[in-house]
Amino acid sequence: MYEPVYLQQAPRYFPVIGWIVGGVSILSFLVLSRYVSTDAGILAAMITGLLVTGAFHEDGFADVCDGMGGGFSKEQVLRIMKDSRIGAYGAIGLIAILGSKFVLLKELASSHRYFLVAFSPHTASAA
Image (cartoon, rainbow, N blue to C red; front, side, top):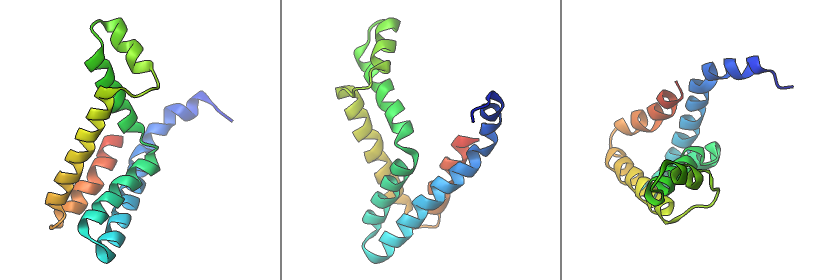
């Protein structure tokens, strides 16, 4: 049963959810990078993060890209951002951000810094 007090108390659990998302993503990286390749491990970690979170943040980013790219007035920007469909700017933005994430994680995958970089943002962004 929903109670408004539950919503007010929810943010204290966000870092725990970040630990779970980061942990599951790192686990998928470790499994695939051990048996297939580092690239496959990074891709698996990214896909796992998308699946666990429902691509919530990526959807919001695509909406912002569409709104800022296609709107000329505040009303247009907000109308475009509320539209559930993805446009060209949103698709281009997602390709750019996911491609950048892959390249940056690949640069860090050869060191122990990968775990810090892959785990910390999930937790810190939830705090």
